[in-house]
Length: 131
Image (cartoon, rainbow, N blue to C red; front, side):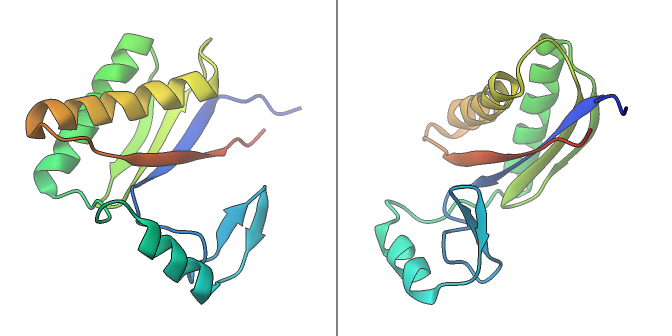
């Protein structure tokens, strides 16, 4: 029996992967194909422009995640911050994955808000756990 040693978290910035997207999307746990009408409705319903991180924002997000990992006593095994999403691989700790993910996202949002004085939205994470 394999032992789980860590968590891989992936989450996206606001508005960068909407339901109906040509890459497919997940709804109610099911992977669905492209739906141009649904995607257009979701684009119309966005309250602001999609968020894409610039180089400085990527560094702020990366630093905030590393600092949060230290606070949580989690080891960052791998971390990539791109313009539209984050990949984070950390070791397993006593924190639930849901709690840890929320704390990482909040740390990133807070750091960006402190620097830029605006609310930065980061969408829900996609959890991938392999045993």
